[in-house]
Length: 119
Image 1 (spheres, rainbow, N blue to C red):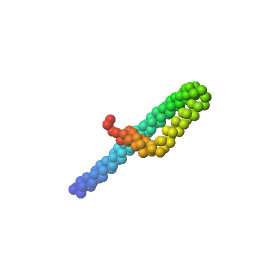
Image 2 (cartoon, rainbow, N blue to C red):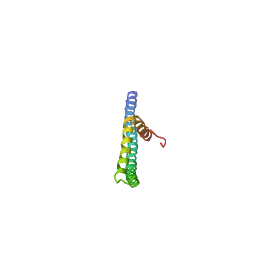
Image 3 (cartoon, helix red, strand yellow):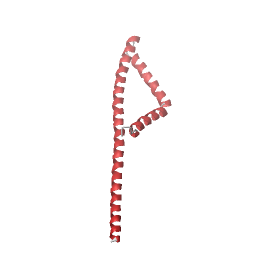
Image 4 (tube, rainbow, N blue to C red):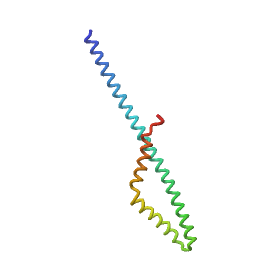
C-alpha cells in the first residue's frame, strides 16, 4: 500500500514536472515571438518613415536645385551645388558618424524590443 502510494506520488510528480516544463517552454516561445514582433514592427516602421523622409528630401533637393539654378542663371549649377552639399555631408558622416549612428540605432531598437511597460 505504501509502495503504491509512493509510486503514484512519483508518477504525479513526473507528470507535474513535464507539465511545468511544457508550460515554461510555451511561455518563452511566446515571449520570444512577442519581442521578435516588436523588433520587426519597429524595423518596418523605421523603413517606412525612412522611405517617406528620403522621398521628401529628394523632392526638396530638386526644388532647391531649381531655385539655385534660377537665381544664378546657369541651368545646371543648382544641381551641382546641391550634389556637392550632399557629398560633403556623406564624407562627414563616413568619417565621424559610425559610432553615433550605431548608438542611436541600438538605443532605439533596444527600447522597442526590451521595453515591457505595457505588460
